[in-house]
Image (cartoon, rainbow over all chains, first blue to last red; front, side, top):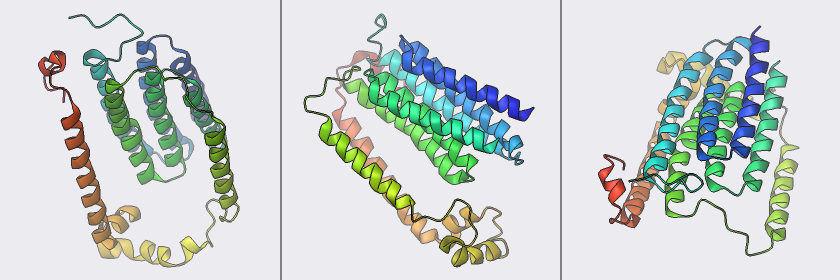
Length: 92
Length: 187
């Protein structure tokens, strides 16, 4: 069952990568990039059980924290910086 | 199953690499770089290199994304067309890749017990780490205890480099930008 979960997560990872590459707007790419981080966390947790080392869950939790930092940085630069060229400009 | 997961992750890494080359939107390239780091870190942890994997996730997906976005803030988000021919860089990359692949021919197989790495001091560390340092993770005990002075020097170098980068970034930031200054503690 863990193997099936791992395969499902790998398929989802592939779909997110496609969305990062194709995604027309910045937000598609931010969400897809964040999803890649989240799916890596889940894949790491599942891989711990597939390989017989459940202590991978601790590492997965640390990954989740790093993923939050990256996404907050992206969104902050998008809100205050000059990254929104292919969407309407951030007003004010 | 382990082989399948590693294979798919490596294929994803190759796909992301070619996408980084092909995509012209630099913002997408930054996001792809973060995704690459997460995939690479997952692969490294699957190969039991937990410390390298954590470093890859923290530096590659965390700090590098922030630094590249800061650089993107000062430039354009669309990549300019190349002014010179791409033939020479491509040839150089292929040559370097070929040299690296040639270098792997001399390496022992993955996980073999009778290699030079596993026959000299490694066994000593494994036997003496817990009685001498009481740290259950041998990598940590080697880094922080047996090679403590080395690690202290590395940390000093990284700390100095970080201070230098911060001073450079602060010096270059134009002060007339009203939005960033009123946007709270953005920097």
